[in-house]
Length: 347
Image (tube, rainbow, N blue to C red; front, side):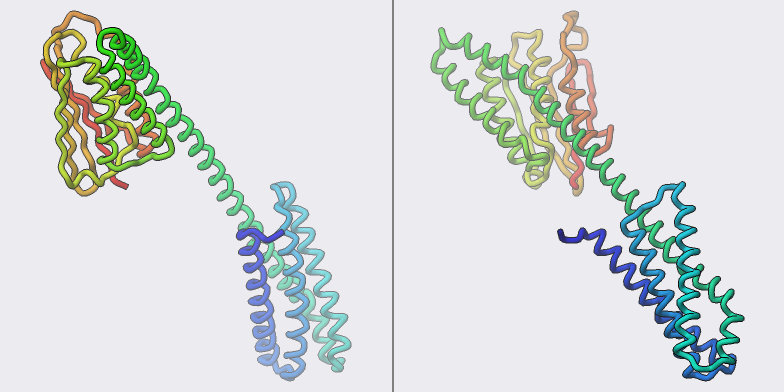
């Protein structure tokens, strides 16, 4: 089984750290012994043996911690391992040097320095253990954060999908009822509306996996929806769509406009038999696409407009899930005009 990038990176860190310990220990000890008038050859041999032994001990504890991440209560055992390895390193150092060095006077001086050497070896082993423990803690934190981010992303995608699914049934049922009503008296219009509905739903399915699409594509898809609504409402519904050409390449969440336009049609035509115009205007700046949807509105009407308000709430929730902001949907109402404004930051 091939090593993961994490395992490979940590093994490289262990190898580099051990090499640094071996080189630094050998150079520093050789320089210090030579400074205290020890023969250079004796100092070099002593340093190479000691550096090799302590490096092996550091490599052992580092690789042990590479496969074992102790919990808080397990740190005591790490301390015990470190002390045992320090004792082993000093013992092995003394035993090998008595065969490598043939100078009894130097060996006697070596025995005097064993406590200091033990302290230095223990510090190096502890340093290597701390590096590995901190690496493990950091990696565990990163993995927990990644799992948390993945869980939040999946939950957000699931909620977005659920919101998208809830947008369709109401419109679909209304369209089917209109088709049924047209079949007997206007079969040609019923057939055309069926084709338009089919094209609209096919386009909706194609967009399920696209979070952001170009404004040009969104307007084309919205036009299919408007043609269906015009068949439903006949001469009573007129639409006016204005946009700046440079905005067409900007992106927005798929089908974010349709529920707002559906609300505008629903409440604009709710209690009137007159011709109604729904206005859609798209403008843009460097990093922001703004869409404004207006419909006639009678604030003095006594009729109760039933509805769940899901269109506006669903759009606002989608915008928050995608962009993390609550100020991207704005509504304004005057005596005769109701306006919805959505702002889409360009990522």
